[in-house]
Image (tube, rainbow, N blue to C red):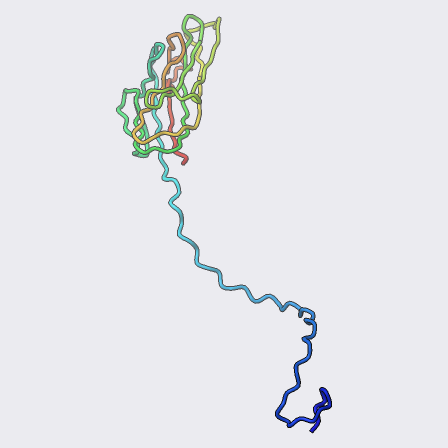
Length: 196
């Protein structure tokens, strides 16, 4: 029997040496995308923010607030996470967080002038974002004129912190809840609302 490799007769039990490997063929076409798998189960709902709110006011009457003194509040409505005694100035925040604080005072002219500035204290320190003021002079009919001063800001409040609203002007501010169309109104108000 002849070997076709070298035309040499061989016994039939031999194998010719392998040839050189040819070049790699072109890549085949990508197959179709498989079907989408089953949607997984919905995850557990996160804890979120538990609502916490406090609103105190003083309706009617009047309060003379000397420089550095605090505004008095008589009644309050709250979510239960605060400590407050009626007819006092201090609010205790039992659970800390990020809070929005709004306040309003209704001011009567003092010697025909309104010159008022207020700030909120947190643990005795005035918060720098809480300072708001109003000024007006030569007011006619000072016994019947009123002005409303509003402040609002956001602050981080720690657990157990005390909150007050303080007169930061250099003069006595006269808060009046009367003399407006024979109707008693809130002469002071404060709201604390946890947002985070």
